[in-house]
Length: 543
Image (cartoon, rainbow, N blue to C red; front, side, top):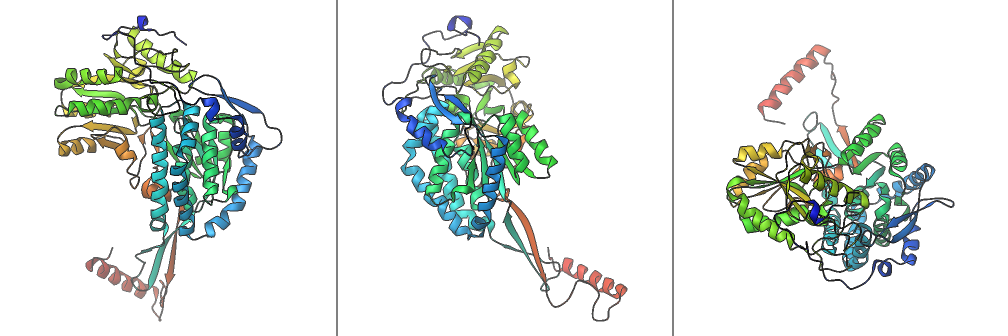
């Protein structure tokens, strides 16, 4: 890893760097004792005497847990157990299944401090950013707990022949969902995505990232307490290239969140088996600050957009497009707010940004900044690692003067780094925002809401936030969320977020007359009768 210090970069604002948040409080070791690890690890499907893999607490670099590793044979067992449990669960009325989600909602909010500790211990993020996961999961539990019946109920459709054909669209569960979830949002992207699958009548075999498996195991434990049959949610953990394909091999449908490169492989494997898949992948998301934006609000929003969870968020902003007429004034405000962010790793509220999750993430962040600076970019804020705070801390960083030949321009950093670009017209801004193969999230800032929505309609991203960073669109749980282009396939949330876990079945009942010659009509007479009928249906405006 490059040793990037304040002396190694060009900065217009030299100084001591971001302040440290107040320390004190509980330690990771006291919040996640061995007894808790052992209890949660018992929920992993792993037979015999499995190998243990150690995870590291990003805040301190110390050992966090030793976790059993599943084998491909264990994955097969997990699917067998899940398949055995699924039919009885699917046979329950939807409202009975939904009641489990609503009880889980209440338990989660009541016992949130337990999981906030785990999320911080496993990811290193600030507690406020960990709480975003609690909010998101509670909202998903409430929404699908209340709305699942409406999404899943049989729906009357127009029949082949009015009155004579009674047609219903029904929704049946897929069976067992293979769910592969990443490390960056371990609660939201494990149980948050599994909830609609469960209420739709499915079982789930989940492979969380080993680094953050304790959070998923805690969520499973809580959902079982809320009434979910224990065998219905199987958790397997292990090396991604080994266990991931095994999950895809047995799944009736695959839900994946992760990198675009791995997502392509998952899609290929699923396609070979003719099973569906939803993929939420990478992004190089843009925020547009238009000429009439409220600059103070936009600067505050940019801090949230770029540095929540230390930038380790698929929908965070890595490209900042600012109208030339307001660029200097905006950047002054944004840089001042960024330099004032308090960095820290206490298991309590108070830090504005936490740590990166691993040495790998720190190396990528450092490399992107260092290469850009050597090629002529200027650091307006941040720009360096902070080993004084913890092994994987890096300051929130703003880069100006980034050019297309720099790695940071097009490659996803997935760290607390944003690049600034100026534009003169809305057309130019839209073209720049749409210039990458990704299309996950974007943000538009303007005082003219009609103008903001007009610009939003031209952006090729699955979600667009006007005068907000990402939470407005993501938190609109009844509306779909997902990516275009290299950012993925399918959607979570809303109707698409639950119907993806179902098969559509049409049940048509024919009454009185067949759709065939009858009552002595020959073929030609039948064709003439039906021709007249078709014309009449069009004239009467039948759909």
